[in-house]
Image (cartoon, rainbow, N blue to C red; front, side):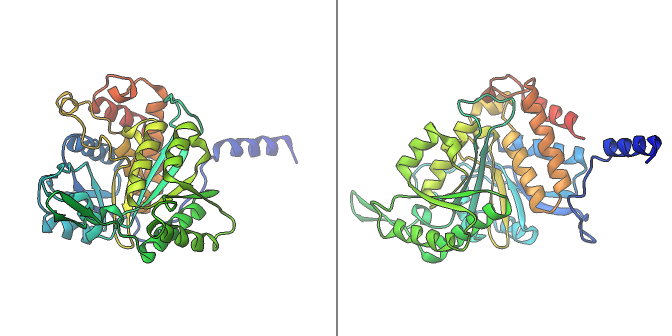
Length: 361
């Protein structure tokens, strides 16, 4: 082969860095409608951040926006119809009043849309110092039953009974989702979190279901851990965990703990998915409404919802836009010049948005 040919081949090798990662079907580029619920507290700030970035990217989506607050008795009918029609929703935090008999709109959404799987990805972001390194945990939580079934009543004055409901059907399908997620994302281990040493029937049924599903995935390591030991192990050695599958209440606690370990609730993405619908939001529920002072100062951290939006774009089969958004966010975090107060900086929400837009390619 001539020297000229060798030079040409080397030149081509240097310039051809883009690989074919996604082959769309005809019509896949048509803009998709997404229901948008800004929510309470910092919700309008961080959802507006997403709107700005999506517009800057010319992402093939458009939002149908509805005002919903956590103090409402129910999610308005037109909002539910919009989500059912669009199949996908992006939402800010909805405040759930403590006590008073007002039910959680978040729980209502999960039940009515059968969003049986909650997924929170807790991982180290390059450039953001944390106590532990090599953290990359996915918490998959059953979202429709357990202590969140809402079956409470007063037996006699001063005595309240709250029922925990566990079914084989819901336990099996969340276990199947966890193992399927691990298989499709090249994850190596699934850990079932439980308290079957005390709740022998309820959590025992959950474990039995996980074990049956695990047999169908011999290439994935399966183990079990009691929830109190799990919390201690998370704080001590979080890098040992990969995918975690949990009943409803434990998953909420474990996901928020893991988020705090990996960098804070302001940077962890998440979503809720069922057979027909998906709702994306900040991954960890702690801080998703925020303090009034953060709202007044316009210093809410939009990173978690921006990364959740990248998850949403992949769900909608727009992987290139998802990659661009995620890469831009990670570059801003890595540089460290533009960070909100929870990450050790003093930047406003808008300053973070502007920085992310500037990093888009």
